[in-house]
Length: 280
Image 1 (tube, rainbow, N blue to C red):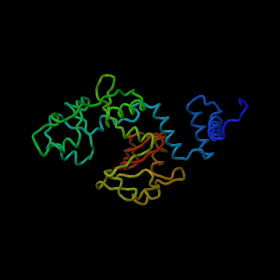
Image 2: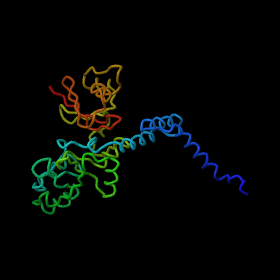
Image 3: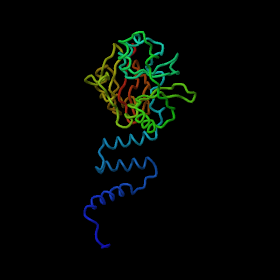
Image 4: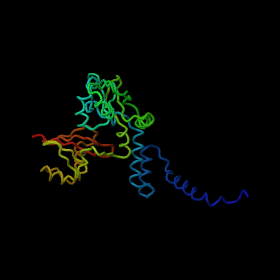
């Protein structure tokens, strides 16, 4: 009986194990080797492009630190702890964030977090209440924390935003769970994003525009009467990357003639959203 062949039900599993073994037979020595094997798997149709992109994102997140994706302190939309609720209502309406860092004096001293839903629940009850009366404790993380560890902690604790502090304990910026997930799955848009408007360009004021990075460079030229198009790139995002000579991060700027481009959304693979300000 010991010489009997294994049941036929085990054959599919055996074939799958053999395929996995064959896939990794190259014995990758580092992350680049592993990514090369996965890309070959896509070429052989074992993975589709979207699956490969997410796997690449997961692997990158495990290597990245909070400082790599945080929103810098200067770009945080904050509220002072002593402000009465009624006075900050216009700011909340303008930015449509769900959470706001609460500061004590300056941006380096974050003492809590204001949830928009708490504000809406209390402002009608007592307009003289201050932000400090309803703020919640802030989740604080160091700049050096790995993103995969941060994601696990945010999920476990039910937090959606963390305040990033430097070696001196001062606020250096903030990071949200959405920021981490976007490194894996790409840009996550919501119904409040200005660029949801049809087309690639959304005009915010006479001299300020929000632009999707995928706008064809010829369409950009037609709209703004510029002459940026060349054979080197197809989109305005490609134009910016070409001029900066690296993949830009959120908050980086490029000035060309009378145009100031600011990166609003970007990940390690591409630029998503750009703010353009034209100076006269």
